[in-house]
Amino acid sequence: MILAVTLSKPVSNIEAIMGKPYQKIKISAENSSEGSAWYVELFTKTQVFHRHFSQTELDDFLSKHEGTTFKNCVKRTEKEEITILTNKKGKRTEIKKPANYQKNLFTAKNKSSLTKNYILKEGNAIPFLIFGGIMTSEGKVISSKYNKFRQINRFLEFIDDILDDFKNRETPLRIIDFGCGKSYLTFAVHYFLTEIKKIPCKIQGLDLKEEVIDYCNDIVKKLNLKNIGFKKGSIESYTEDENPDMIITLHACDTATDFALKYAVEKNTKVILSVPCCQHQINSQLEKNQKEKITPSDSILEPILKHGFLREKFSSLLTDALRSEWLEQQGYRVQLLEFIDEEHTPKNLLIRAKKTGPAKEKTKPAIIDLLKIQPELWKD
Image (tube, rainbow, N blue to C red):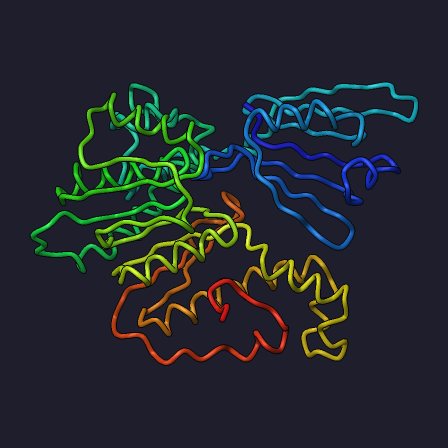
């Protein structure tokens, strides 16, 4: 299995081929709840863009661009590092060497620490992890899936922290996972609550991809699970009569996170746990404002806004800061927490919100008007 790919040394007409003057592309295996297998970063001189690939999309992309559009390509697998070099005459050279496990895989020390204080223990054969290709039938975590294993456990720790809020319930705890993808997290929450904590629950997973929903419902049938189901649909148009107690999202892309937060507030959801992804909306608006000179050139933020790379980072932080402010005005106590180390996922911020009181008077943060932007949650 490919763990990472780096493409560099683009041809001179790269912009005509790919639409932008990319200088380097980095691809890494990711743990997305949306069913994507690869996280892609595309770098120009001043900006970085993000995409997600399925396995098929990755294969097609590499077939089309490695050694042609990009003259240098380094692929890293669990066993080897493969470097592909193409000279000016089109001669292709392939160099293979053993993988640097200190750099690309967990060291023995890291691996042994996985069993320490984790909610889901390695060595226990957990059915949904076996079906999902994370564990062997003997309960051994597959080396290329350790990131996913750690990610699942980390999210369960956040859920474990708030379970005291649901003590002495007479009805099952109702949870919705928006943008569930292949539903590693959905199944993990169900297993954690029903098998470990012995807390009755009803869990619904929602995703746009029909084949993913069919896959998840097939696992439910094969494992004979109760009170867990999956349906196809968009977060924006989702409706349900019964209010959820908890809403979770893992890497719901761009404004999908905002729609999940809106739904949670409308339904007076007690707890929200959300790991955002690909906060494009504000960055796109700022980029447009820069090009059309809508944002004043003497803006106090001009030193940040004029650099595409910094503008994107700033937009990501601003997006989640404004989400936090909006939730606080809706009567939630909000924490922005580190989800998991950046070396394991580039999207490592978690929004944890707990309903503590009535909504306050809505006051739009001044920075919205200053930057002339329209974040989804703050639209009039």
